[in-house]
Length: 380
Image 1 (tube, rainbow, N blue to C red):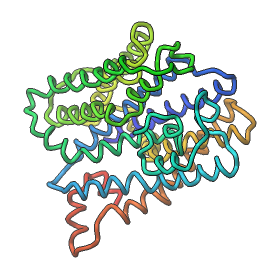
Image 2: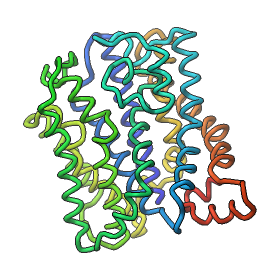
Image 3: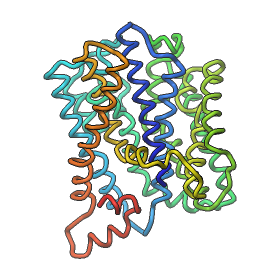
Image 4: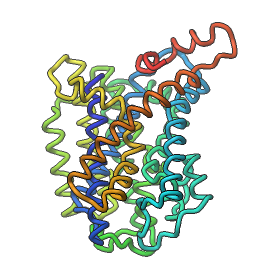
């Protein structure tokens, strides 16, 4: 579904803009506008829902948990480790400032924190020296790692849900997303200093609703259920434009009426789910879609590398440019896209070809390629 590939890059570009504005705000001693910052969190929420949707929709053949995990490992870790090594050289060697540097109550980076980030385990510890360790944007990859570990058990359960029950189960998944910030209201601790939270959100609450992998799992499961609804033809008549408009309404309304913990996923989960389903329907129905244009699909294929590198691109340009500027942000975008293409060609694809399929028995490669989703067979 090429429109979903294009949508991935749109979401990554939103995160890039949020972090670019964050860099400007940090120079001025402030925080980015609340609406823009929370649009970035909605984009990450879209990644989680989309991950469950695509993995479920593309799953074919009996497969094994081991073969699935091998493919996910080959997709996730090589690029992550290469980028992390480059960032260590930039931060420790060239002295480039990084997200988390200079934030209140944030200790300097440590070897233990960087090692936990390399293993994508740092978000299990609700302490700044772990959460901001290594490449901080990979906190979402730590969540994806949990999703991948659980998928071989979740997929049979979701597959057995009768079609007529799917809408009700989807509502239950949305309720589970809302249950996370509801439970976080009882978590104490000192309030965060950022302006947009008005002193009403604690660090422990933000870790729970934003960084802790288990608390993001309901969004992934919702994506799996949406994939079943799509495959079984369960109609959801809500277009792309209305879904995007509803997302904006939920952000504005949520900022006005909801406690802060609900703004990181719960307030926008319904329009995000509707948007994923609506975009998937464009390709299924053969409708026109600007997300399916060749440039966006090309950029969508680079999304993983772009996400890994975008904060580094911004940090490097700001460091050597002498501060934030519009021209510098454009230069950082172009630099990140170029570096993402190199990472895709030199690391991501070769490592996947080498690591994704076991070679220990004759004929094993052909059998496992038959199990791979179509998108992964193309990659191999």
